[in-house]
Image 1: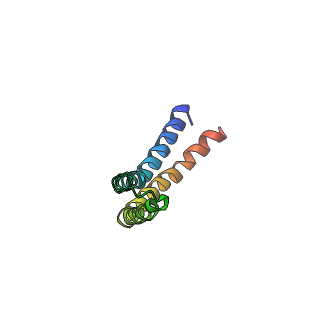
Image 2: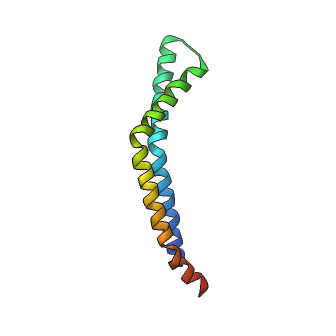
Length: 93
């Protein structure tokens, strides 16, 4: 296995992580920003107020995108396992 192939595997893994995590992270960021603006406008400074809306929003995103996330991760895992014989051939040489 060449250095380029290893770099491609790492790049594909990092891209997969970003692809799966970004909807959840952006949802939490957006909900946190909206709640912070509402808190600033109403002078309510309760720290735990952001927790419940974020959890509800993230669970909603997981309900709608969870199937796609698991399918995408499963396809990536299958591609990775199919490369194992190629990696073993190169290591045993």
